[in-house]
Image (tube, rainbow, N blue to C red):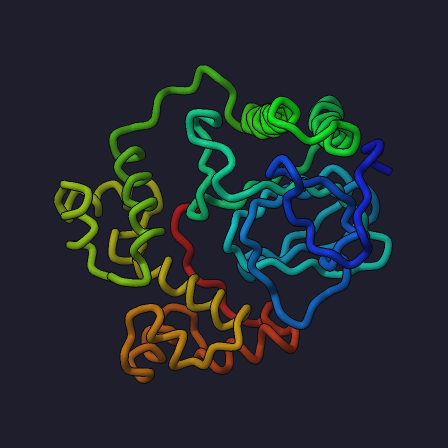
Length: 300
């Protein structure tokens, strides 16, 4: 058993949403995530999950990950999320509002939706340090009187926890990011904002003040894929999220992503994912989405 100490309590079956400081902490069994849902969901806030007891699975953007005591996973806002609902699985959850922490507070960390999901299996001293951070946050949210100073303290503790996690995988002293890495980071941020309105690399290059060749060179260096492939990957991922997590029709999903004609959207989706939109939706909802070919995902 992975001991985590005291955690705050909330009414059973409620979402693990942030609390008074823009931060929340609770145990998995207290939330509506504990029972496997027929469809994935998209949270509007960040969620950090530390498995404490048992073994189970977490499905994030249609990729199923096994978790056991010491597994920590960072789910970004907007990602498609579904817990496996295995009996005996317990985890400590920390949530926080999407824009609560700035890049200056978390130097070197990708906090936006575009970033890859952080996942790590902790053991030994690593597990003790990160577990203590979860416990400290939960205890302070429980015992402190809400107010500006207390809220600032809780946010500081959250930032410290995330920075400690970052140091586990990226120790200080690494070389600064390359020019290609900086360009790709800017491209990825622009793509997060614009993927629903444009699939043209030329538009992103113009917005960023560079050439298509520069974006393609950066994309190939970081992901092994061209800039156009990176754009199509992001649009296809959003299509999968919408098909899985909403009741919008296939035509409505296509229109929201810039495809006025359903046939054009269907051809695009089948090329990128390997199934028609309708078959993909059915596969996700009957639990057989593991049979769907994995989409090519850019950046991690």
